[in-house]
Amino acid sequence: MDSPIVQGNDLFLPISKGELCLSDTLECGQCFRFGREADGSFAGVARGRLLRLSQTGEGIRFYDTALSDYEALWKGYFDLDTDYAPWKARFSEDPVLAKAEYGIRILRQEPFEALITFILSQNSNIPRIRASVERLCARYGEPLGEGRFAFPTAKRLAAVSDFSGLRFGYREAYVYDCAQRIGDGRLDLSAVEKMPLCEARQALRQIRGVGPKVAECALLFGFHRLEAFPVDTWIKKALARYYPGGFPQALQPAGVAQQYLFHYIRTLGNE
DNA sequence: AACCAGGTTGACG
DNA sequence: CGTCAACATGGT
Image 1 (cartoon, chains in turn purple, red, blue):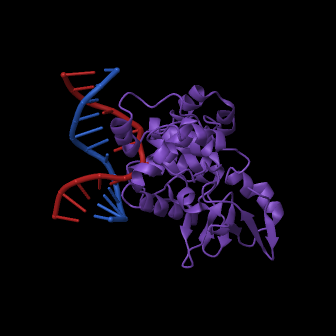
Image 2 (cartoon, rainbow, N blue to C red):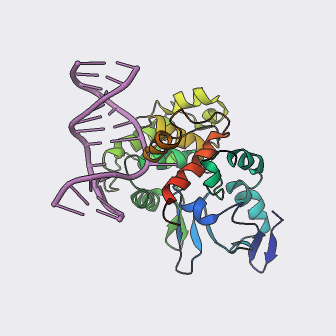
Image 3 (cartoon, chains in turn brown, purple, red):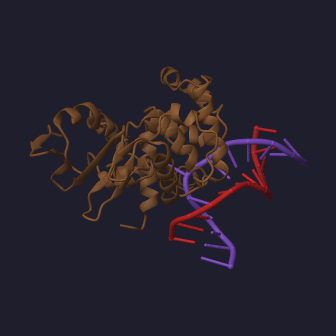
């Protein structure tokens, strides 16, 4: 990967789809706030900012983006200061993962956003999760223009007494409990960041509606704990089929391997 | 029109 | 400890 090049108001980052594939990364269900525009570009909100980007075989274009914003926000968001190469080398020695694609990177999302969105994700599907998250943002997030909204702050959600109308179903009470715990200090996300993995798991699972899967997703996608290993219905099937003896210890960081496996089984037969 | 969705909870063996 | 229905709602 080279350094980004300023082109008018845009920034162009020369990078291959093997290093970072935008569609795989933004549509694999680790984040829920990016969608495709009519022209094929991606647009969405992250870290309280609007972002539009597109990708070709040559690289990625960040529209209306200053170099300083790339350095301060987007480079980190797309985890571009992390070298995945040694991990991919290990994965490619595994007979199953050797067939997978490695274009996904683990986004560095904000902990609160990841926690809430994965509470909403349970027993739901990706299109519906996106719609739920958008309704939450439209109601409680800062308007950013173009009909888009930032993800609401924990402080704002802690002040909400009634989440009805957002069509969260039974997850409504879970979001409420999460916001309350953060609001009254029973849960401190910045403290969770510093905890050892086991302790962080325990802390998150105090929240109603946060079981093993949601906790792992929050840790992997919101706290960048790459060792976290979410087991959902898809991974459960994949483990039974390909790794009946258990997931190999050598495939580390397990969370990154999990994403490649997840993508692989979900796209079987679609390519 | 059923069935399933990036699950968790609480009850019951 | 493991199993299992119920949960609210919408996508396919």
